[in-house]
Length: 184
Image 1 (tube, one colour):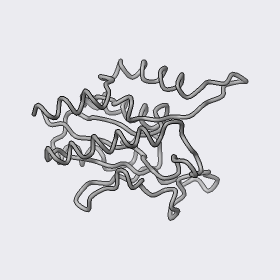
Image 2 (image 1 turned 180 degrees about the vertical axis):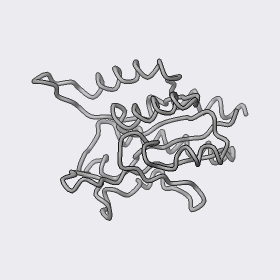
Image 3 (image 1 turned 45 degrees about the horizontal axis):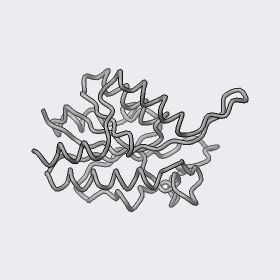
């Protein structure tokens, strides 16, 4: 089985000073960078996903802005695939399925942002399409939410969504994935 790394929306707007700062984004991206380095060292496929908003009222990921650019911690190499998307699900109206088929990836190691939106939507879609999924919990980030007057801290959003994602695949951590890669 061929494994590949899927880095979702690790873009400048999610970092400190960005238009949609996430809780723990720098730490998550630093771990994603470690995974990226390990996959590159092993010669395993890497796919970057970049969200660009098509909504004129979008508050972030506005095309042509620095905020929409992929963060330097996980900057793609020229030969690495970058999928541009406009919806939370990285498969929706993109060429992600075709790229995965072309590279022979059957097992997706998934990290990025936001856990409760794009990581969740992509993981569910990937599983529905027959891929084995491993979500790297500590290499994902999210934000505080509010629902009808109830404040939900990011750590609770993260925990709830990762708990639900265990139905769709393994939820692991960076150290475990790096250990597995070292044994290839």
